Length: 254
Picture (cartoon, rainbow, N blue to C red):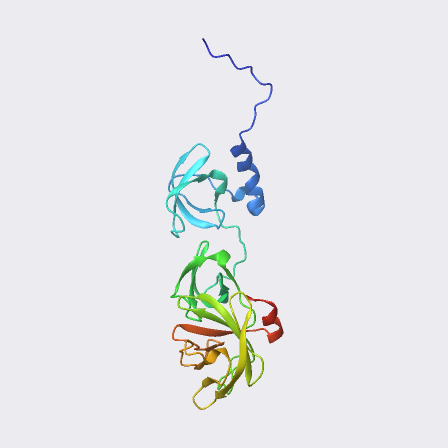
């Protein structure tokens, strides 16, 4: 049996992907002129992320690209994701900028930028220098004023990270002689007293949870790149957060 002939529609239906191809460039930067033709060899930017890329081939409404920043493997994307130039989104990923990198809010300095990626140096040594996406990078608040010759650690919250940056709770120096330790979930792990030896630059935990031998660090107090740290374990570092003890009690991650 012959297939039934289709009736000619009075109006042509616009395919969904073509409709998006017309509409999305308007929202991507406010101008259709910003979209780029999918021409083999063309240098373009791919959204989301404004990744720099080179067009390999084209087929209909799709474009096969090589990501110059190696964000993804070579692959296909719709033409409406291809831009002639980045959208001009303001990003803190500027060489030399002091930023915070998620997850974890690690203090870092931007080394270089490429498209939608940012190469950073982690000031807290949580990770080796490396690349991360721009959406993981946010401007750092005004840095804590460094103490050129510190005589005592600054009061407040110190986030504890282990090894390559695993979050392990935090401690709060509530006064010049007392502290409280908090578990990763925000529950108090106990409180105690401490003293600081200005000559050696070391913190001495006189009582409370940090007297446990599991906290086997040098307990050295350091100021590096404007960030204050206490070496509470061989692989654990407590890094100062610019908030008071009341704020620290109300938030596990700040």
